[in-house]
Length: 433
Image 1 (cartoon, helix red, strand yellow):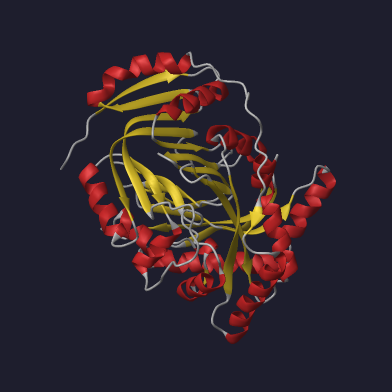
Image 2 (cartoon, helix red, strand yellow; image 1 turned 90 degrees about the vertical axis):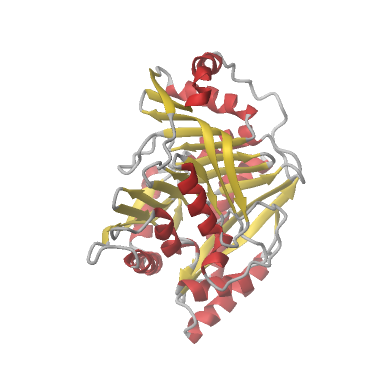
């Protein structure tokens, strides 16, 4: 067994908000960065409030071909923390599927790296963990971070011209095609997504900070791999493994928020009692239960919460919590194989829905609808769902975000389109100003 030696140091942080800004600003020197932040959103399953991993000691970059086998080998070889992402198009490694739609972002299908430096923040306690051969840098790095001056926003705000890859009329037409599949019995539900895009230059960190201020999401991500950036305000957990326990929290059901407290409560209650939104959520919960049952101990798959309303800065959502216990001998990679891509971003039945999605949608999803997170040295993991996210390729100046909604037999295409605009609002605001 490979033993990876790390040196750790714990420090009390008085002002965590300031320190997080200093830490992430300092991290921009690195070409490999993963920043995960709960924005202090209360979640009983969180292991820490925020974590920063940076500086790749080694890395794995691949397309979908045998991607999960490669990831498993890399994980076993590294035998330590690894951070990275799983793109939606890894579906092609799991099933006889394809991804031939437009792709100007050009992200690899899978990327993970073994960080030299990790910073864990839980309440006011910072735990610094460096690979032993770089541990002599801890004190110097901390001194720089604590004295790091946050630059004021001295550049012009983003004023991009955001375009839609699919017009409203085209969206309605494609939604009706999906409904025709449903009426024929091909599927019960499909998550139909469409892309908003622009070209130009943005400051990734400043754009990310503005998006966080608007959304304060529990599963936010700042990701950087050279010229590829993900700026994510995700509210959704894909899957967490903690020992033999699995936790999935799919989202289905969305309503806008109001500044008027009475109207806002009404919007939340209307969402909760909306039979269409509930049925969408239940279909995905059944899909998740079915996926997890493939690798779970018999009788261990349980639904702890069913379409419970949660409130975020921009929207209300219905979220369910599904738990299961893993069979002995099932690895973390096998667990992900059994449940990826997440049901909330595909539909039911999953394989049929993914085939229809590929034919209907115009843009390759790539990292959108995928997951970002980490594996621990003891085979645990935690991954979000990449939604409410801006993707940026600084090499070709291409900027993109996508939104989607679930199409069912009861869907009204115009209403689904309006829901997409609600989900797109925060990204448009920070990009168009």
